Image (cartoon, rainbow, N blue to C red; front, side, top):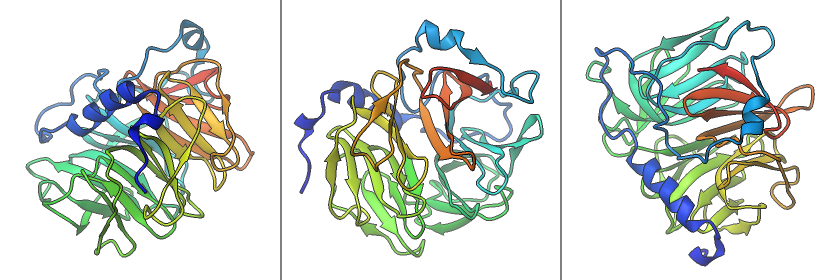
Length: 312
Protein backbone atom coordinates (compact mmCIF):
# COMPACT_ATOMS: atom_id res chain seq x y z
CA UNK A 1 0.00 0.00 0.00
CA UNK A 2 1.34 3.43 -0.91
CA UNK A 3 1.77 5.66 2.17
CA UNK A 4 -0.04 8.99 2.14
CA UNK A 5 1.91 12.24 1.85
CA UNK A 6 0.02 13.75 4.80
CA UNK A 7 1.99 11.59 7.23
CA UNK A 8 5.03 13.87 6.87
CA UNK A 9 5.06 17.12 8.82
CA UNK A 10 8.17 18.33 7.00
CA UNK A 11 6.92 17.75 3.48
CA UNK A 12 7.85 21.19 2.21
CA UNK A 13 11.43 20.90 3.39
CA UNK A 14 11.72 17.35 2.11
CA UNK A 15 10.26 18.40 -1.22
CA UNK A 16 12.90 21.09 -1.60
CA UNK A 17 15.61 18.60 -0.77
CA UNK A 18 14.22 16.14 -3.30
CA UNK A 19 14.16 18.67 -6.13
CA UNK A 20 17.78 19.55 -5.44
CA UNK A 21 18.71 15.88 -5.27
CA UNK A 22 17.15 15.09 -8.63
CA UNK A 23 18.53 18.19 -10.39
CA UNK A 24 22.06 18.54 -8.96
CA UNK A 25 25.05 17.93 -11.22
CA UNK A 26 23.10 17.36 -14.40
CA UNK A 27 26.10 18.36 -16.50
CA UNK A 28 28.89 16.08 -17.61
CA UNK A 29 32.11 16.44 -15.57
CA UNK A 30 35.12 17.71 -17.48
CA UNK A 31 38.31 15.73 -16.96
CA UNK A 32 40.50 18.42 -18.50
CA UNK A 33 39.36 21.21 -16.17
CA UNK A 34 40.82 21.65 -12.70
CA UNK A 35 38.40 20.98 -9.83
CA UNK A 36 36.50 24.04 -8.69
CA UNK A 37 36.69 25.27 -5.13
CA UNK A 38 34.39 23.52 -2.66
CA UNK A 39 30.97 25.11 -2.37
CA UNK A 40 27.74 24.48 -0.51
CA UNK A 41 26.11 23.15 -3.69
CA UNK A 42 25.31 19.62 -2.54
CA UNK A 43 22.46 17.17 -2.97
CA UNK A 44 20.49 18.32 0.07
CA UNK A 45 20.20 21.89 1.37
CA UNK A 46 20.91 21.66 5.11
CA UNK A 47 19.91 24.13 7.79
CA UNK A 48 22.91 26.06 9.14
CA UNK A 49 24.73 24.40 12.05
CA UNK A 50 24.14 25.92 15.44
CA UNK A 51 26.96 28.07 16.84
CA UNK A 52 27.44 25.69 19.77
CA UNK A 53 28.06 22.79 17.40
CA UNK A 54 30.60 24.81 15.44
CA UNK A 55 32.42 25.73 18.64
CA UNK A 56 32.80 22.03 19.47
CA UNK A 57 34.65 21.27 16.23
CA UNK A 58 38.14 19.76 16.51
CA UNK A 59 40.66 18.23 14.14
CA UNK A 60 40.82 14.42 14.15
CA UNK A 61 43.30 12.57 16.30
CA UNK A 62 46.49 11.81 14.39
CA UNK A 63 46.10 14.75 12.00
CA UNK A 64 47.74 18.10 12.71
CA UNK A 65 45.29 19.63 10.24
CA UNK A 66 42.26 18.32 8.32
CA UNK A 67 43.02 16.82 4.93
CA UNK A 68 42.74 19.41 2.15
CA UNK A 69 40.10 18.93 -0.54
CA UNK A 70 38.92 21.14 -3.39
CA UNK A 71 35.90 19.81 -5.27
CA UNK A 72 32.58 21.30 -6.28
CA UNK A 73 30.17 18.61 -5.07
CA UNK A 74 30.56 15.77 -2.57
CA UNK A 75 27.77 13.26 -3.03
CA UNK A 76 28.92 10.66 -0.48
CA UNK A 77 31.54 10.32 2.25
CA UNK A 78 32.13 6.80 3.62
CA UNK A 79 34.84 4.55 4.99
CA UNK A 80 36.21 1.60 3.04
CA UNK A 81 35.08 -1.44 5.09
CA UNK A 82 38.30 -3.27 4.26
CA UNK A 83 40.83 -0.53 5.04
CA UNK A 84 38.99 2.12 7.04
CA UNK A 85 40.17 4.76 4.57
CA UNK A 86 37.92 7.70 3.79
CA UNK A 87 36.24 7.60 0.36
CA UNK A 88 34.58 10.64 -1.21
CA UNK A 89 32.28 10.32 -4.22
CA UNK A 90 32.35 13.72 -5.95
CA UNK A 91 31.49 15.58 -9.14
CA UNK A 92 35.16 15.20 -10.10
CA UNK A 93 35.35 11.46 -9.40
CA UNK A 94 36.41 9.29 -6.47
CA UNK A 95 38.84 10.53 -3.82
CA UNK A 96 40.56 8.10 -1.47
CA UNK A 97 42.49 8.74 1.72
CA UNK A 98 46.19 7.84 1.56
CA UNK A 99 47.78 8.58 4.90
CA UNK A 100 47.17 12.26 5.57
CA UNK A 101 46.19 13.06 1.98
CA UNK A 102 43.20 12.63 -0.31
CA UNK A 103 43.94 11.72 -3.92
CA UNK A 104 41.68 11.35 -6.94
CA UNK A 105 41.42 7.72 -8.08
CA UNK A 106 40.38 6.32 -11.46
CA UNK A 107 38.49 8.04 -14.29
CA UNK A 108 36.57 11.27 -13.76
CA UNK A 109 32.93 10.33 -13.20
CA UNK A 110 30.28 12.46 -11.54
CA UNK A 111 29.37 9.86 -8.92
CA UNK A 112 25.77 10.81 -8.17
CA UNK A 113 24.93 7.50 -6.49
CA UNK A 114 27.55 5.62 -4.47
CA UNK A 115 27.59 2.61 -2.15
CA UNK A 116 30.18 0.18 -0.80
CA UNK A 117 29.51 -3.50 -0.12
CA UNK A 118 30.91 -5.29 2.92
CA UNK A 119 33.54 -7.00 0.74
CA UNK A 120 34.81 -3.62 -0.49
CA UNK A 121 33.16 -3.71 -3.92
CA UNK A 122 32.16 -0.21 -5.00
CA UNK A 123 28.82 0.49 -6.67
CA UNK A 124 28.06 3.79 -8.37
CA UNK A 125 25.99 5.67 -10.92
CA UNK A 126 26.19 9.06 -12.59
CA UNK A 127 27.78 10.83 -15.53
CA UNK A 128 31.19 10.12 -17.13
CA UNK A 129 33.71 12.65 -18.38
CA UNK A 130 34.48 12.66 -22.10
CA UNK A 131 37.50 10.40 -21.74
CA UNK A 132 36.09 7.87 -19.29
CA UNK A 133 34.93 5.42 -21.96
CA UNK A 134 31.57 4.86 -20.27
CA UNK A 135 27.97 5.36 -21.46
CA UNK A 136 25.94 8.45 -20.54
CA UNK A 137 24.52 7.93 -18.00
CA UNK A 138 26.69 5.11 -16.74
CA UNK A 139 23.86 3.02 -15.26
CA UNK A 140 25.11 0.72 -12.51
CA UNK A 141 28.90 0.47 -12.47
CA UNK A 142 31.12 -1.55 -10.15
CA UNK A 143 34.75 -1.52 -9.10
CA UNK A 144 36.71 -4.28 -7.37
CA UNK A 145 40.04 -2.44 -7.33
CA UNK A 146 39.18 0.49 -5.10
CA UNK A 147 37.87 2.71 -7.89
CA UNK A 148 40.90 2.53 -10.19
CA UNK A 149 38.73 0.96 -12.90
CA UNK A 150 34.97 0.62 -13.37
CA UNK A 151 32.81 -1.87 -15.26
CA UNK A 152 29.24 -1.36 -16.44
CA UNK A 153 27.08 -3.98 -14.76
CA UNK A 154 23.76 -2.98 -16.36
CA UNK A 155 21.45 -0.15 -17.45
CA UNK A 156 24.26 1.76 -19.14
CA UNK A 157 22.77 4.68 -21.08
CA UNK A 158 19.50 4.24 -19.17
CA UNK A 159 19.76 4.91 -15.45
CA UNK A 160 21.23 7.68 -13.33
CA UNK A 161 20.66 6.44 -9.78
CA UNK A 162 20.77 9.45 -7.46
CA UNK A 163 20.01 7.18 -4.51
CA UNK A 164 21.84 3.85 -4.34
CA UNK A 165 22.40 1.23 -1.65
CA UNK A 166 23.68 -2.33 -1.42
CA UNK A 167 22.77 -5.04 1.06
CA UNK A 168 24.13 -8.55 1.48
CA UNK A 169 22.29 -9.71 -1.66
CA UNK A 170 20.32 -6.90 -3.29
CA UNK A 171 21.30 -3.59 -4.89
CA UNK A 172 18.54 -0.96 -4.79
CA UNK A 173 18.54 2.33 -6.67
CA UNK A 174 16.21 5.21 -7.51
CA UNK A 175 16.35 6.84 -10.96
CA UNK A 176 12.79 8.16 -10.99
CA UNK A 177 11.57 4.65 -10.21
CA UNK A 178 12.62 2.32 -7.40
CA UNK A 179 14.58 -0.58 -8.90
CA UNK A 180 16.27 -3.61 -7.33
CA UNK A 181 18.53 -6.39 -8.57
CA UNK A 182 20.09 -9.48 -7.03
CA UNK A 183 22.34 -10.39 -9.97
CA UNK A 184 23.35 -6.83 -11.03
CA UNK A 185 21.84 -7.56 -14.45
CA UNK A 186 18.09 -8.07 -14.18
CA UNK A 187 16.06 -5.39 -12.42
CA UNK A 188 12.67 -5.41 -10.73
CA UNK A 189 10.73 -2.14 -10.65
CA UNK A 190 8.91 -1.50 -7.38
CA UNK A 191 5.47 0.07 -7.06
CA UNK A 192 6.46 2.75 -4.56
CA UNK A 193 4.85 5.74 -6.27
CA UNK A 194 6.87 8.28 -4.31
CA UNK A 195 10.06 10.18 -5.06
CA UNK A 196 12.91 8.83 -2.93
CA UNK A 197 15.54 11.08 -1.36
CA UNK A 198 17.77 8.52 0.38
CA UNK A 199 18.12 4.74 0.57
CA UNK A 200 19.89 2.50 3.07
CA UNK A 201 20.04 -1.31 3.24
CA UNK A 202 21.10 -3.12 6.40
CA UNK A 203 24.53 -4.68 5.79
CA UNK A 204 23.44 -7.96 7.39
CA UNK A 205 19.69 -8.34 6.98
CA UNK A 206 19.12 -6.25 3.86
CA UNK A 207 16.18 -4.45 5.47
CA UNK A 208 15.61 -1.38 3.33
CA UNK A 209 14.97 2.16 4.54
CA UNK A 210 13.86 5.05 2.32
CA UNK A 211 13.39 8.73 3.06
CA UNK A 212 10.45 10.18 1.15
CA UNK A 213 7.92 13.00 1.34
CA UNK A 214 5.61 10.49 3.03
CA UNK A 215 8.13 9.91 5.81
CA UNK A 216 10.76 7.33 6.69
CA UNK A 217 9.74 3.97 5.22
CA UNK A 218 10.93 0.44 6.06
CA UNK A 219 10.75 -2.67 3.87
CA UNK A 220 11.74 -6.26 4.63
CA UNK A 221 11.06 -7.54 1.09
CA UNK A 222 13.25 -5.33 -1.13
CA UNK A 223 10.60 -2.67 -1.52
CA UNK A 224 7.54 -4.78 -2.30
CA UNK A 225 5.74 -3.59 0.85
CA UNK A 226 6.45 -0.76 3.28
CA UNK A 227 5.71 0.43 6.78
CA UNK A 228 6.15 3.98 8.09
CA UNK A 229 8.60 4.64 10.93
CA UNK A 230 8.33 7.59 13.30
CA UNK A 231 11.62 9.32 14.12
CA UNK A 232 11.40 12.43 16.35
CA UNK A 233 11.31 14.65 13.25
CA UNK A 234 10.91 13.98 9.53
CA UNK A 235 14.03 12.27 8.17
CA UNK A 236 15.90 13.59 5.13
CA UNK A 237 18.76 11.06 5.05
CA UNK A 238 19.25 7.69 6.72
CA UNK A 239 22.03 5.14 7.28
CA UNK A 240 22.53 1.81 9.03
CA UNK A 241 25.39 1.64 11.55
CA UNK A 242 24.89 -2.11 12.07
CA UNK A 243 22.05 -4.58 11.65
CA UNK A 244 19.94 -2.88 14.34
CA UNK A 245 21.24 0.68 14.63
CA UNK A 246 19.79 3.37 12.37
CA UNK A 247 20.99 6.97 12.11
CA UNK A 248 18.73 9.59 10.52
CA UNK A 249 19.37 13.22 9.64
CA UNK A 250 16.19 15.18 10.35
CA UNK A 251 14.76 18.28 8.73
CA UNK A 252 16.28 20.44 11.47
CA UNK A 253 19.75 19.01 10.79
CA UNK A 254 19.87 16.91 13.96
CA UNK A 255 20.98 13.29 14.21
CA UNK A 256 18.40 10.81 15.48
CA UNK A 257 19.56 7.31 16.45
CA UNK A 258 17.56 4.11 16.86
CA UNK A 259 19.11 0.93 18.26
CA UNK A 260 16.10 -1.26 17.52
CA UNK A 261 15.70 -0.91 13.78
CA UNK A 262 13.70 2.29 13.88
CA UNK A 263 11.13 1.53 16.58
CA UNK A 264 12.41 3.96 19.23
CA UNK A 265 14.73 6.95 18.89
CA UNK A 266 16.98 9.39 20.68
CA UNK A 267 17.85 12.74 19.13
CA UNK A 268 21.07 14.72 19.27
CA UNK A 269 21.07 18.15 20.93
CA UNK A 270 22.47 20.24 18.07
CA UNK A 271 21.97 20.77 14.37
CA UNK A 272 24.90 19.83 12.15
CA UNK A 273 23.06 20.63 8.91
CA UNK A 274 24.62 17.87 6.78
CA UNK A 275 24.04 17.04 3.11
CA UNK A 276 25.33 13.43 3.16
CA UNK A 277 25.20 10.72 5.83
CA UNK A 278 27.12 7.53 6.62
CA UNK A 279 27.35 5.54 9.86
CA UNK A 280 29.10 2.48 11.25
CA UNK A 281 29.49 0.86 14.65
CA UNK A 282 33.18 0.15 15.17
CA UNK A 283 34.86 -2.75 16.94
CA UNK A 284 34.92 -0.58 20.07
CA UNK A 285 31.12 -0.40 20.03
CA UNK A 286 31.03 3.31 19.21
CA UNK A 287 28.85 4.56 16.34
CA UNK A 288 30.78 6.90 14.05
CA UNK A 289 28.79 9.19 11.78
CA UNK A 290 30.47 10.87 8.81
CA UNK A 291 28.71 13.73 7.04
CA UNK A 292 29.38 16.64 4.71
CA UNK A 293 28.56 20.16 5.92
CA UNK A 294 29.04 22.99 3.40
CA UNK A 295 31.79 21.05 1.59
CA UNK A 296 33.58 20.03 4.80
CA UNK A 297 33.73 16.36 5.81
CA UNK A 298 33.10 15.85 9.52
CA UNK A 299 32.82 12.94 11.93
CA UNK A 300 30.94 12.64 15.21
CA UNK A 301 30.55 9.88 17.78
CA UNK A 302 28.07 11.68 20.07
CA UNK A 303 25.15 12.57 17.77
CA UNK A 304 26.65 15.91 16.82
CA UNK A 305 27.44 17.25 20.30
CA UNK A 306 31.03 17.53 19.07
CA UNK A 307 32.53 16.99 15.63
CA UNK A 308 35.94 16.36 14.10
CA UNK A 309 36.90 17.86 10.76
CA UNK A 310 38.25 15.13 8.49
CA UNK A 311 38.63 17.05 5.23
CA UNK A 312 37.71 20.39 3.77
